[in-house]
Length: 189
Image 1: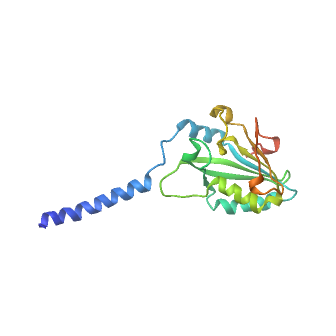
Image 2: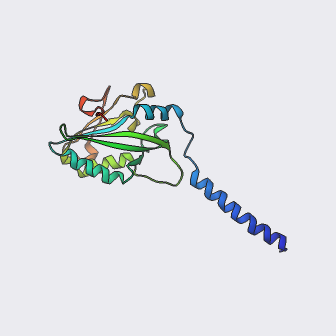
Image 3: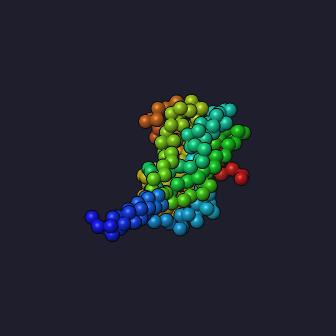
């Protein structure tokens, strides 16, 4: 091996390593959808609302915060495009008077390659399993379950209503709703 080949090897190797690291670090799962991002930014949609048994909202909110982690960010793998491409920063609103916990999108960003966050559906499953005796009803945004054929514009306000109570997670059967129930509406910011 000549000195030139050896020098080329030591020059090219760091460049290739840096390029591979850069691509893996900043690659996105897909192309961004500007209309969706604008809708999330202006509308700040409610993803879920949990109606709790009397006096249970604070405890359920604490469990949700624990499940979400310190940054309150989630991914969603069970829904429709473009929801599955994004990471959502959530804001939890707790109404102790009505015993309701509302999870609202604060902002969304296209998901990047290697950074993993809690999955929203798994987090909701965990909370309904561990806190089922403190929950009575749950409302989920229509996009969180990939079961409707309606176009996006028609699903923006619709959702799924789930009676939780003491049923096992496998026994929960969501019912489609045209609009959010009054108790699941966004609270005053």
